[in-house]
Amino acid sequence: MSADNKQSLPAVTLAAIGVVYGDIGTSPLYTLRECLSGQFGFGVERDAVFGFLSLIFWLLVLVVSIKYLTFVMRADNAGEGGILTLMSLAGRNTTARMTSVLVIMGLIGGSFFYGEVVITPAISVMSAIEGLEIAAPQLDQYIVPLSIIVLTLLFMIQKHGTGMVGKLFAPVMLLWFLTLAVLGARSIIGNPEVLQALNPAWAVNFFVQYKAVSFVALGGGCAGHNRR
Image 1 (cartoon, rainbow, N blue to C red):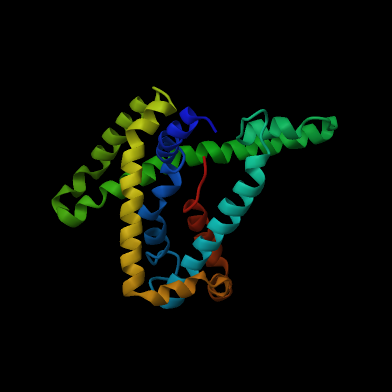
Image 2 (cartoon, rainbow, N blue to C red):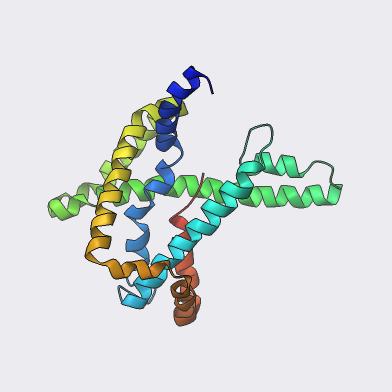
């Protein structure tokens, strides 16, 4: 590796934090709260909390660490990724019928992608701004207008390209991840029994105990590691 590459590696890594991990990094704002709010038939009882935490952890391991890093990252088309690009790669040397199937699968995957990129920014921004209610309950009526303003500004910045986004949001996301690490370590030290959730048996028991409702929570767990 050349000296220039070595010097640019920290900058590129920091920029990647702002561009790539901004999505998955903001999920803690709403995932656990929404799924344990009681609307699905379970609340903050021990089995539900441990089961859902175990579900999120193992989804991260299986989907992000194994599926994406081990398989999807290697299946690139001349360095490009994404659902439609991979569909083009998979469509080579296939029959016309199989190509039609791949196109349909690609369109379905693309629909999920566009749905995710529409709802995720709105959910993340509103979840963050809703925190104002804790410090100043009288600001409740301004949550939606403030969310619209923030989202508008974000999309105005985004049109300048991922380079600009990375430079602006990388320090913010780095501070956010450090905050999560400190708060998480503090909570684990205060409640070390939560580490039991690393046992996949809790996730299995979650499905057994809550049956069909647990699959609704699974959707919330997937929101905890959504990818763009």
